[in-house]
Length: 212
Image (tube, rainbow, N blue to C red; front, top):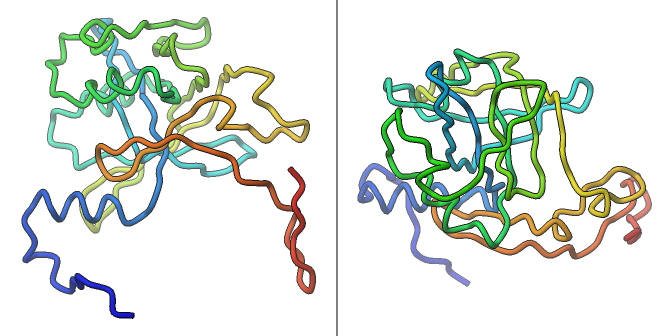
């Protein structure tokens, strides 16, 4: 069966069409709100779909930023304070979370503009989202420039974690469906998550079995 359309020269595609297509190709991604604070004490909140796992020991996460054009408030805040938070998005705050992608001025707090509530811990100055079920506090560890397109990868260590104990399996696996965490496809498509199954550790010569 032939699959159409076929693209080979992506430069010929209209700009927004190309952005939507390429952003959708990697499949479902995490939908997170990143909280930070600037040197004036203004809390910043921005939605990201580029958060990913780096390693468990030490516990590291990564996040991709678009090229630095001098107006990346979240990036600037993290560089100056070294701390930020990652907050999972659930269904009841999707519209507010999406609204944080609007280009507010650096003296305006997205918390105020969207009605979300900042929650400040004791270990660092970056704000959490009180309405979020899963909240992660991080400290900047490294910054890696991506030569191919000018994007920037920040690597940070987890220093604090808040989550419901009922969403944890006995082996430490986090049940995202139970937590209500949503996923994102492309730039603006939000999806519910539903657990299908967990499979046992894969070994040669034997297919994995359903374990949960």
